[in-house]
View 1 (cartoon, rainbow, N blue to C red):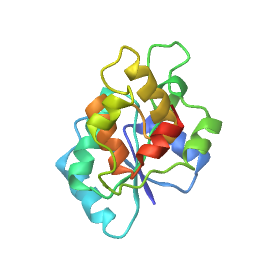
View 2: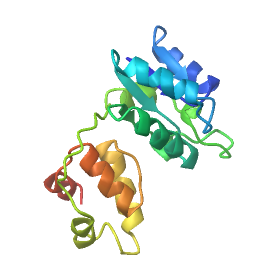
View 3: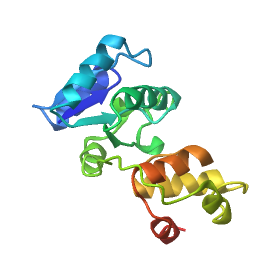
Length: 171
């Protein structure tokens, strides 16, 4: 298993809980072609696990890597667990060891089944209502798939083969 993180502090955080972990650092959102090629090659014989910051840059990196390594696995961090002590930064490097150990048990493997449509989410009130974003965030955290706008959330639900019934159970 090879973890993919954004920076050296994230690397150190993983090493605190898994000293012998194999880790690739993207060096921020400008993921080089060299790193992408390396991940493509590694994915042929290894499980790739993306554990990136729960922010715009982290999602940008995740999307770029998935274009090259579509079978990459995912760990999504809660924003509330990833905030620095001074409340000015967000990222993997700020999570507690206990929280990190708990999310490592929730690796999401992509399947890409079409179980749910965006219309299903509209009918459930997960798109188009004033509190839809908060509900999607709560459900995304419970399912360990992270937050997304309506369209992104629908895509994540299908990517991880989550059924409409599973979503309804969290409403």
